[in-house]
Every structure is written in structure tokens, then in C-alpha cells.
Length: 170
Image 1 (tube, rainbow, N blue to C red):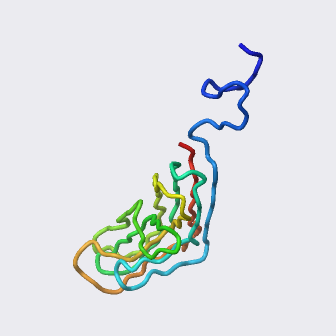
Image 2: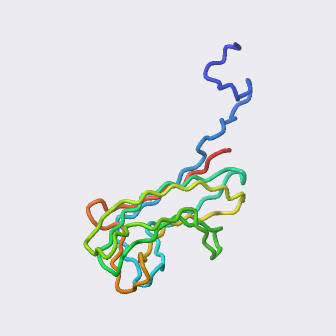
Image 3: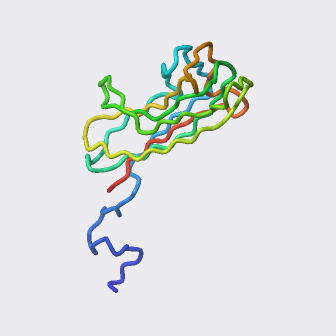
């Protein structure tokens, strides 16, 4: 023992500022409590919370996205909702999915449903470019039927959806 207290085994004595792997380097948060009404067009996705942009401090680090979507549906032929976490390189138009969920389907049932959908995504983007993460939702159907749909986010008693994006040191 060298008389240094609180130094983990993977840190070299005398080196300051070396963080252990797995440490959170950045955390960004976005939330929205205003109702978002999804388009009547099936699978036409809308942003549920404001997008988050982040630039990795090291392109070899990871991104961890956690989210809670407060959703509701109340009408349609075999109604359901599609939601997910999408990402893109900022300034780009292509969105890639990290997490997709088909949720809320209950057959022809069209009564009011309020529910929470969790989302968790681990991402290794391998870039130093600015990244954009989006929490999205849309009306969809559990069958080939079409009609009017009543899907929303952030409605009802627990009406706030949120997303947290963290850079994790690898």
C-alpha cells in the first residue's frame, strides 16, 4: 500500500484524471407535458419530446438512451401505436431506429386507454459527428383495416414523456 486512499485497482498511482471505464461523461434530458396528437396517416411518426443533440467526447464511447412514453389511444379499426427511439447524424435526413415498439393493441376495442411504454437503447455510433436522438410515436393498426385513429402522447393524468441520453465511457 502506498498510502493513497480511494484509488481503484485500474488507476495508476500518481496519474490524475483517469476515469474508470463505464463512467457517465454527459447526460442530456428532454421532456414534454403538452399533448401530441398523432397523424391520421398510419405510421406517420411525430416527435413526442424535443430532440436531443450530443457530440461524443471520444468516437469509441457508447450512448445509452432511456425513455418513458406516456401514450393513449381511443379510436380506430383494431387500433395500436408505434413508437420508438430514432437517431441520425445531425444535419442528415436519414433516421435509424434503435428501439421500436408495437403497443396498445387489443383487437377491435376502441375504449380510452392510457399506458406507459418504456424504451431503452444502447448505441455504438462510432463517430465524432454531432448526433440527434428523437422519441417518436404514430398511429398504426393490428390488422389491414384502416380508418380514423385517436392516438396521442402526453395526455391523461400522467401526462409527461421524457428521454435521457447519456455518453458512457468505454
